Length: 350
Length: 246
Image (tube, rainbow over all chains, first blue to last red; front, side, top):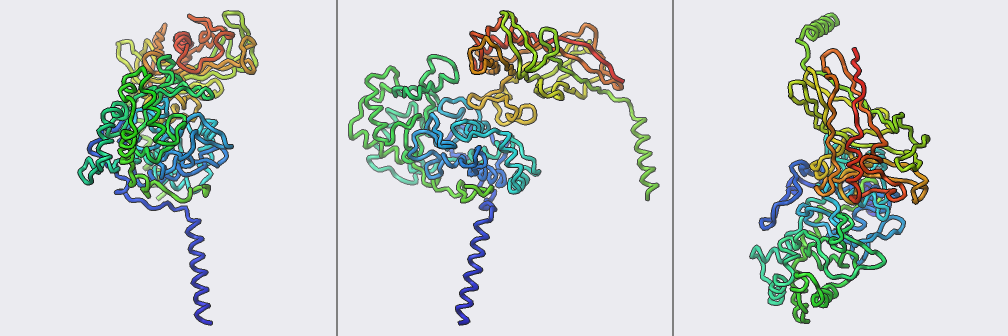
């Protein structure tokens, strides 16, 4: 009798503790060491300079909280993380086009978020010129979060949690768009993927299989001029031979520059973690890597640009080898990095 | 204790009053918006453009910055900040420049628009906070000038016209440098706080050198035709009166 009562009391206490923990909005504590930026030795100099926005555990934690918080969207249903999933290198697995509030569908495939500080511009059309101002797009786009910056600030002001977060990150609790964007940049800027099998191979920690080796050779001959290592993009814009989707009629780069010759050019994406960032292309039309390789193999004959022509027709063996190599770009360390994940947002919304 | 405090305060006060005179002064600039030589009235007033098309204005706001004052001996005072002048916000139309060396000034310079560095340097604050609705999200950069209104000549929903003019890249640079010489020198002194009135002729945005046809060009919201409007707004400013307050 007595022991069962003890068990009961312990059970109640455990339940209370569990409830208390689940309501707790304290962020997973993160140390200074964990937010130290480690630049891979073989990467070029980053475009983004953290000098004007030094990463701190508190700033990173605030950025992370904002990234996972649907409070940024008009009806508090969509967060950055709704479309940028950590296990997909922050792309949106299996969604061709971006999804927004009210089941609205955007016009482009959600890009992966990785190695952002090495990007000179953002979006498939390169319309955004700086990491810090990138979030204005999804927040204010009617097909995504459809919210005004003014309302975002109003909602954040109402939250005691965010007052505390901003205070710990910026020494006082003033909430401004500049602080919001700098905190987000601390979080997204730290998303560095540089520990794939390929990277380990470069550092002579592992060996590639024979098939991966062959794939690497093929890649260097046929793909590397645009998807240039080590970032696996040359940051340029290209028409990769896809017939424009007439329903979208997306001019891509041409919309930004207003130049005819830039119509249907899109930013060349990095191929890091390409295995898990499906679907592919700016409009997500291909769901499998094999379709992508088939496209390049078929297009190259009729292509009027050199890099595409250079690919030539790919044999089945070559496709298998290339695929094997592309999979060495999967960075499990990055995809499972606990620093980039939280269970619950400070506003209590998910 | 109380007397000690009081005497300390007295000594401090005395100290300040016998300090050497200040070397710097202040200038207040008031922007006054005119349309066809009348004070601009939003929404209610109906105007006519150079092509005889009727129109009304609902929004007029723009960035000015990089103020410089050239004194009569050729030296220049510089202020690096930006101000957003908004017809709807009376306070925004009065700006203050501080720490101006005392003396006589012959000319004022400023930019209409935001320089390329501030267009490319990420999240900004104060006047340049994207909160003010003067930042393009989809194609990063500031809108230098916004002029919105209605005209029956516009074949658009509710007959609106919308000129959002900006662009910092070489081929479509809409930044314009404004130079306004004073007919008589402007005096910056320690004891008087002068107010310089600058008149802004809103009609000039639509008129000179290119008369904007509301029917053909009801909206400009990207690089297409932006520099045409920018060339028009390059000479919308003129010097009004100078008022010296005691």
